[in-house]
Image (cartoon, rainbow, N blue to C red):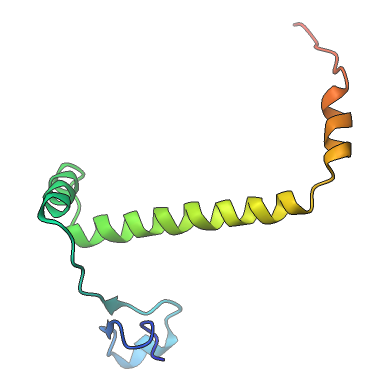
Length: 97
């Protein structure tokens, strides 16, 4: 398995310094419907960014959302529901200023 996911991508960081980088860059051929690419192109242009940056940002947002969902699912599995309901039922005084 190479750094780009098992031969799926092609490394683009061929410089000697690249081995010291935490994240390595890879190429990935993307097949997408014309309508989706056209919308992405339009939005990237509106955002004054490249298509590459648009896709990298979109992927990062999706990865973040999925990892966040996993995090809270795992945390929820360890939750003490009774303690939560007890705290929720407590009346907290409201201070008016």
